[in-house]
Length: 393
Image (tube, rainbow, N blue to C red; front, top):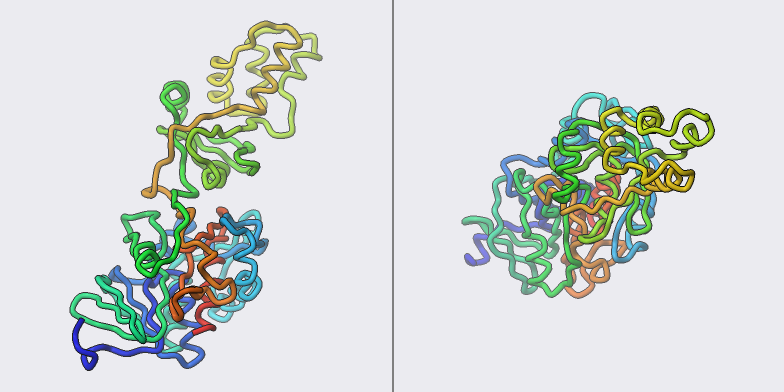
């Protein structure tokens, strides 16, 4: 690295100008810290801009620790309690950004995700934060302080915050830098995998259902003791939609996803009790009362009753509510909204996000082994973990 005299010096360096990094910078800047944020991309907040269909589902008013996946389910409690959805809403209202609740406590901008990013950039400017774009970090060293090399420049500070995100959506710049730095400094990492991601059909199911792409229906998806009742969408390659994205974060290879196609209703009761003829046409008509016609017909073609006895119809009913889908895999990080796993929470202080073994080194946001459900929870983790680290700098 160049001699010390050429280094740019700060109180804290933050790697990554996403949601967590910007919030951390704002909180540290407000406390009088001289902060620089180094970002690989040409502009900050790329993931913010594409979130929520471009409207940014920036938090969820029903946020609780139960909405997060982690090897330590208690870890997120402290940060989430110390920076709440109400705290972020106060900031949004201060900047007069109009927003609305969509469903299930999800808050979206009325206008565009750009409103949230503009707000964060204004707050950074007011706090004296320096945003340094197109900064590809090539080396990090630590002696009595941290030295970060990006291109021909060197930056030094006693505190370094890793807010580099996960592996999801590489086309907007996701890299494994955060995990590499964690390993460099001896921190353990929980195995990573794509989360909030569409699932792909196995070969048999693809041949049965792929031509129904675009068909959607409300279901309950179940896996690993978790259940989500929302919409499922059939795609050319598999299944997606909110219910499937939610359950995908819990799914692991070789496990089935159990789908209730008709929650809280009985399909065959009409056939059993009406006295109408027990035919495939009657059963199809009954199932089409609850499901889109094409899906009902196709599903029944594949799951025909073995007979027309009461027992056989009850077995069809059971399969309607317990349809076991065995995915071949996921659409991977290219389509995943988040990364499950990451820097082991056992390595970090739950109050400050600081490394227990390397003083002055912090990890926040998606790079940490804390993953939210769909619906604004991952943003709330970014704001909360960022704020906690920023206040500790």
